Each structure stands twice: as structure tokens, then as C-alpha cells.
Length: 212
Image (cartoon, rainbow, N blue to C red):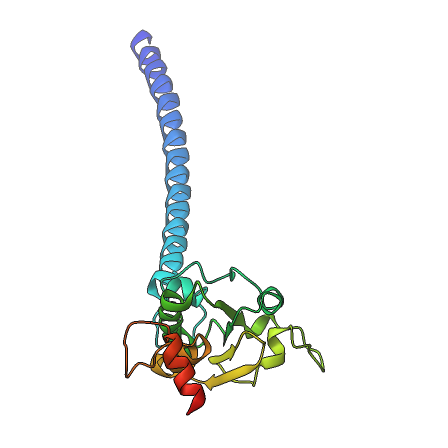
């Protein structure tokens, strides 16, 4: 009898420990399952962010990736522009308006040329990139508003001289040389055929050209 009671006691103790162990294993299994689900969600979210990252942006598609001058023109100083159009007109400073949208492959490709224009004319002229998406829809605009000069295509480059007169309106991906020729005239510089370097005409050359 004593042996039987001892065996029952031992079985009872181990049974309780076994039940406790099973309970812990169940909790551990639930915890592992929860951690697995959370890890999977983090992995999926990270992959989605990586997949849609601007780092994967291509210059030949029409997807929105961010500001084109930062991503594709390599120039974060263009947006916002250093000087707005009303100020430029008031100071009689030539202005170069570049109309664009961020989800256009043509505009993305053209952004590098705008950076090149800034490299040579950024101090003498106001280079003003204008997002067409920022326009407020109205029937009429004033000459101090960029939308006044917009013709409905992108990219579009409009050059105003010191008096605010439109001296150039180039639509599409116009070549740098075409813009350079106009700006050389605006700033009275030697034509490219005479000097690749930006050099002002001499006083005698200017007078000679005026009297011929």
C-alpha cells in the first residue's frame, strides 16, 4: 500500500509538471507565431519601399519619382528658384522660364540641359523652373505670372530680356546651342562661331555692327 501511494504521489507531481510544460510550450509557440507574422510584415514593407524608391527611377519613363532637377538634373539649387519672375522683371534681369512636370520623360531628360544653362548663365539671368501642376486655373494671367507665357507643352523654355520682352519660346527638348545663341544676343556676347567662351563684344565691334 505504501509503495502504491508513493507511486501515485510521484505520478501526480510529474503530471502537474508535464501540464505546466505543455502550457509553456503552447505560449512559446504562440509567441513564435506572432514574431514570425511581424517579421514577415516588416520584410514585405521594406521590400515595397525599396521597390518604389526613387533610386529605381529611370529617366525614360513617365512615372512620378520626385523633383526632376534633384533626381535627374543633379541640381537641388534650381527648385525653388533664387528669384521669382516679378522680382526679376523689376530688376530688369533677363529671365529663363522652364515649364515642366515631374512625371514626364522629356522633362526628366531636359533637366540636365537646364543645369548646364545655370552653369554658364546662372549669375546673369534668373533661371526659373515652373511646375505646370502648380498653376491656378484662371481665364487670364498678368505678365508677372509665369503661366502668362505658357503655351501648353512641356518642356517649354521662354526667355525674357532685360525689358521683359519674349525673345525666345522653345518647345520640347531644344538643343543647348539654340538657347545659348539667344542668350549671347541678350547679353551682347560674341557668337559661338567667333568664341566658344562667353566673351562680351568690344565697344568698337558693337559700334561697327550698328553702323553697317
